[in-house]
Image 1 (spheres, helix red, strand yellow):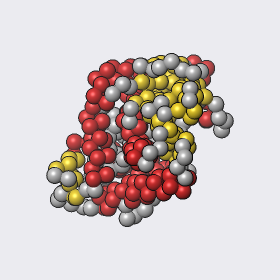
Image 2 (cartoon, one colour; image 1 turned 60 degrees about the vertical axis):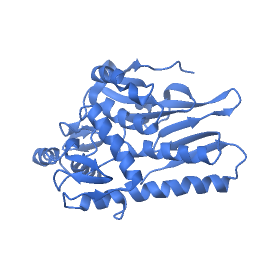
Image 3 (tube, rainbow, N blue to C red; image 1 turned 135 degrees about the vertical axis):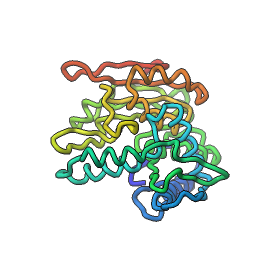
Image 4 (cartoon, one colour; image 1 turned 180 degrees about the vertical axis):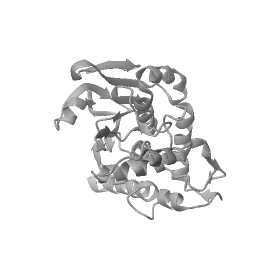
Length: 305
């Protein structure tokens, strides 16, 4: 899917066997969700100019169903139909001379509405033919969840998984020694350095971060970042620099990280108590302040290392 992955595990299974399990699952996700290949399932769906039902693979249906649930739960702060807006931002990112035209943004925004997509009897139904999906805000987490299922089934009892910086850990590195995951310091990352603002023992849980310091672009003299509000078509501007979400499933943490960055600290904290159906959730907001300092705000965040 145009990105990277890393797997570490503890056990006696041969590396070749574990690699085969992992790479088979990655290949299937790439075939379903990659925006980097024309023959992927999502690209075929987006090219289909019809409102007739489009049969979905089971894998695609599961990810899209969760994406639509999160869109409803976040009142559109997360929206899997942001394809038209994503394409405009990608063009601007790839061309330094490109200007984000307000008319283009308005036209693209008019096409974004998760309520214009439904799943009926295993098929996707578009309310209008120009609906275009973009599942990048959830698919890396979903891939991590699928890899975890495969490793569990293969008998791997302790492992660390990372796909596009979305992480899940099972068991311990050694008896009494947990996997410890760091939350990146956005200020250090923006300066090209590596540092953390938090380090958290992680066992049988996922940790995913969304930040406005990743994939930023400058167009027409203004700075934009890749996490934009689907409801307005503009980069989210709630003073929140990054949100890290702790959840039982990486797909949930991934999608909610995007939504909470859009919603901001106050609205995000009001939203989270109503999402108990997704298990116990935690969130760490890093909020911009005076003189460039970052303020921490948390919800359900556990004790750090």
